[in-house]
Length: 166
View 1 (cartoon, one colour):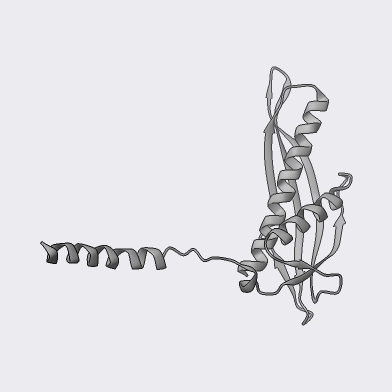
View 2 (tube, rainbow, N blue to C red; view 1 turned 45 degrees about the horizontal axis):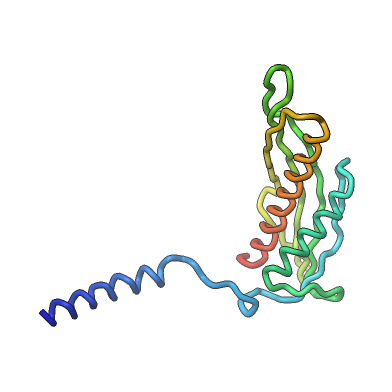
């Protein structure tokens, strides 16, 4: 009876070790960052959407700080962004009224390294967020702003993930 219990514990331990060690997850902390000091360089808004660069700056700052980076004005690493496209598209119409919309933001995001090398961050740089609204125009505008904020937050998260997980 005791031998069976020991055998079961051994079997459970033999099963747990590969499961725990082989899941692919790692704990990411400040000590494991590729570097800590970073600055946000130029954020250029080539779209007609007002103040898009200011919102991008704020959300990128929040995301960097949340992930353990330190913002320094004289940091060796610098992040630069060019926001190229901002569109609000109608996806569907119901009773001759637009009912579903999509915010599309496309940009180029890069990391300037101390060696002078430039690394592109975040694959294709396109983010789409859709929302529905059949309400008055001011309510559509409010939902557009919320969708824009969400898209910029997602972009910022992808930029930081690109840096951390190279």
